[in-house]
Length: 292
Length: 310
Image (cartoon, rainbow over all chains, first blue to last red):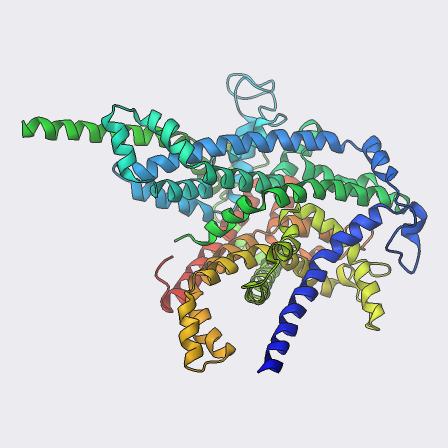
């Protein structure tokens, strides 16, 4: 019996350690390599730990490459999306969870079904739509003559301000709030909007936190749409698109250490944010899985 | 008196309906602009030839030509369809098995938050950065992976530089990036299985495998179905990783498009490089139908096994 337990432990920790090394080694190597000097990084056989940690790699990186600008753009775009998604999701979640009206279940199912459409159905039409918005970006009343919203932040924000998963999450959460609470407020003459603002919103704070963090991280990583939009508009370029261009900017082997430092800068802040807010984020994923 | 009450209740009900619709109005507005219109427009485009510069209503009508071209003449499209199928099946199934193994090992372990973090870091890393890091790791002459292989006297591989290995290499990266997410969903699913079933099995003398086959797996079916359906929908649309790794991270060498191209990448190039909006829209529709068919089959097969909750 004892022997069996030991074997079990060995298998278990074997899985952990082997898996853990596979998962974490790339990051560890990246961070160490980004702190090496130009000479060290070219040494063969490979050196892992730099003789002197070259922190100035990062200083030079920021001087040569506008990563701070991409950070700012990403932050602006993602916080706007997150804010509006929280609003639309909680409003719709309250409506679908607690108000009764004809067609409610059908609407809810329809919203869930939208998750199945591949994003590629939307790219071209939405691009064209944003180009034809009247009176902005040099457009006339017919939306012709200019670029519309294409070269400004709304192009990155508007297509993401409603999120089917967000509506689902908020509805599931709001449905659990006792009806007696809402009815009591109604009898006291509370309007539905005040119920939403003064009862629903405070009670759904944990769900809002989860949803907010989840959406923020998801958007932070989003690449395809920003790539399409910002390739011709570098002013509003977000971090993933900017990171992708690192390989062009530091293409020569002599600049490798800057390239790797750029990747670290692109990764580490989000990982730290995740570490701090782990609990909320993971709750979001778990709730995703519990659907149905 | 009663009549009055009924009327009042009715009025309150219709008022509630009005407010219900009002609270949903941003969603309706959004979906009509960013969902209904685009789908209709895409459908229109898939029957026309259009380059985004001329007025779309004057675009030349092509009938079914885009579809027949893509499915019969265009060898590239059929190849990328096949590549994507390979990618989707491989990453989703193997990834699921790996995630399940890790999740099983994780349940009832101390320090799990540290381990969880280790497995989870790739999930919060932009896929773009993951693609570039792995492009570096995979370098044939001096990449980390080949260096490690040589420590163990194993032959180094060509990885991204070889047409045969390029797509599987990207798949390994895809699984590495996604395993933390799937693992977490499995951990949540495992937590939902009541402990008493295992206690009862132990009393009856069942070993680990018997418990796994007869308790864990059947009760985990809704979770498996969820992972399968959402994983497939995502994998069919894979773009970021392939985009970053196919043209080579830095000097990883370049392999022909046919060996790594996926539908998303092919469509992106058709639309935004060659400005063939009509053909690209037709591709999007074919992709949609494929995804739909796969989802329905998955639901069908797994539901037959008694999953009613999805």
